[in-house]
Length: 71
Image 1 (cartoon, rainbow, N blue to C red):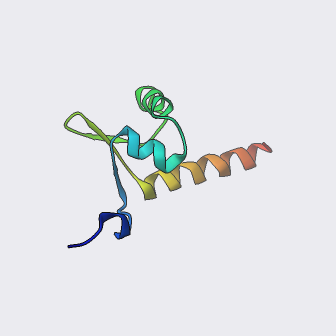
Image 2: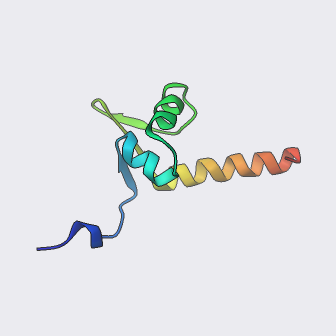
C-alpha cells in the first residue's frame, strides 16, 4: 500500500480548496477570482480545476507585465 502523502504532486488541482492551498489563499479568494475570471481555471462538471503549470505561467505573465509598467 502506498501513502498518498508521499506521492509527488500532480499538475492538476481539483477543487477550490486545493487551488487555495497551492496559492496560499483562502477558498473564498479563489472562488471570487474564479467567478470574475481572474484565474485560469476550468470545470469538470461542477468542480473547479486548475493546472499548477498554467497558474505558474499566469502569474509569471502578470509579474512581467507589472515589471514592464515599472511596478
